[in-house]
Image 1 (cartoon, rainbow, N blue to C red):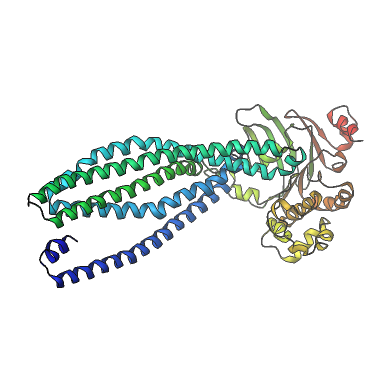
Image 2: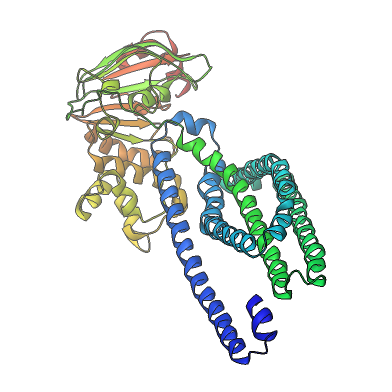
Length: 532
């Protein structure tokens, strides 16, 4: 444009003007093509990066100890994997290209301006110290505001997840309005946090505009005077006015990137807070636990949850391979904690647990847990078919083995009665099945694993009396020759156990067979009377 004004137009050179116009159009066409390529490639890079980050986050979460999930609401964890990684996507997809492209553009503009007229160029750069001061002033305030945004959206997700999971309780206790009011308050805090961040940036961006206008005004005032005096050509003044505007355009773009950067930094703090939390670790010299027979020994085992009193206090007992141990006691006695320690969901505070003579803290977690079969009272089924849920016990099992496991626990009749049989989709937590049916599917899943040690934690609590009678014979057949631990409130379901231990306030107070414990005064006898 400068050349067109100062040479072609001023010199009435139509041919030169035509040539410059053609180059001008071709330049913009090239800019369109390269911009398209840049946007596409940066989107690919950004989404690949977020794909890898989400994968890393998920894999890390799968290995986190139970203590982490005890302290972290599910909704907040979900927010880290979804919303916070999305904030990083925006920065990588758009921000990086702007930083590189605009930085090169700024450098080129500075070089051209200094080459054409260094005095006008230096006048243009007078506003840079002011620009730096404004950016520094807003930086920490914007970062703090976006930290609040990340926290508040995590709270929204947490409340939403809890409300959806507990919708039956909400409706049963007519808490709809109260829950709606609570969610509205949390949602309002998220709105206010976003507005504070937006308000800060809305003030920051106009400052950049004003500083840019000030720079243009200085060039127009000084350069216009130079043109009037005949010291500078009109095309040169046009170049400086245009380049001054272009000089502040990438700065405005970088300001937008700065906004995304602050949001991404706040999100990255949350993400790396998870990634920096140590996952479950094997002992430095952890060995692979060979196939075990099932000899089990607890030796003076103690355990306390973080900053709490002991849940287990000096528990000791031994179980021979193939025997069945029943654990009874009142709520809070430490029954489930005992199982959690055996599976190393938590590590004992003191004492030792031996499996076939191996201290379980010295073997790898995978080799230990692969030999455990676990059925809980609160049965969890994954979104998928019944067959897929049973196959969680052994992904390599055949269809015949799946059906055989289901038949053993008397789950086969109700499964084949469903419209799609074993291909019936059970959805989240198995909502299409009754609690007893879900429990039977969990039994089949544990059976298919064929574990050396079978753990049933209140596993028949959700099964009705008729179904319990049906599976009792199957359970006895299953437990034969396999080391088993049964936690139960129904004492009638454990009378056949080889050994029964009674836990009370974390202490092992009684040990023996059903017939022996029933004949002596104590907690077991009291519980037995209450169940009859």
